[in-house]
Length: 274
Image 1 (cartoon, rainbow, N blue to C red):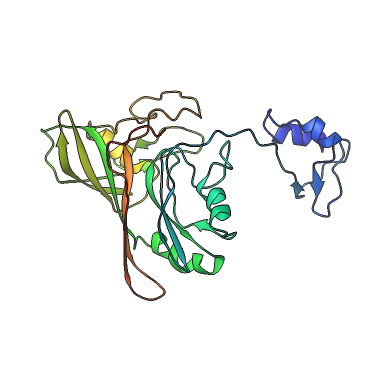
Image 2 (spheres, one colour):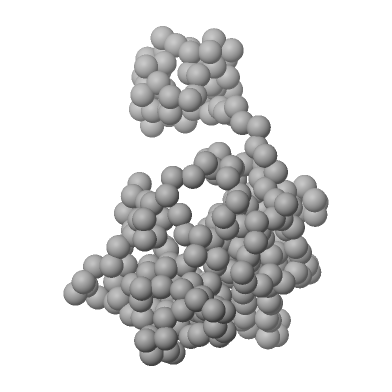
């Protein structure tokens, strides 16, 4: 089991020391020993050591809260859920404690570097009815992005193509000739010199869809570390926020049938928070 754990876990996990301290356990709480025979289809449990995470700057604003839902307006660089190197500095971990809601969970995805609205269920019993809305495309999402102004573009325009993003590969790509699986309405809201604020209405939810669609129009979103080129930045560098804002959410409440609409308190351009 010791050999298997070293093969399975990243190098940063000190397997030998954790085995010696009996920090790996089986489902019945027995400690895993270095020389235990390898047992397939067996669960092994452990708590990994967490790094000291710097505070993500910017306000985490609660836009709305009721019995079933919490809607927050998150700053760039704050992860929605605990994962990888971002555990304590995540919306879920922070708000479960601050709001005393131990079952709080997000109903949809919002990238760590994207700012704006994230909707969460207060308890497990409310997760299903509201998550179905996102799964069936019944939530109207509106984003705003700051990108180069191109007067030659004929807007509004609907971008339709096939996007593919493979696990473990940083960038997604357009697959020519493949069936359409991504669609975004692109409109211009305001021209700011050499840049413009674009209103984006996605009708699908592919990974990196908005970033790839604006890139394909020749107007990549400002502050993007992946498109058009990959820029390696420190995970704790908060100096250059992606200029993409999840600005509005609107839907019909599946429980009481009321019309719901929420709007971000943030505006473009987004500046580095202090």
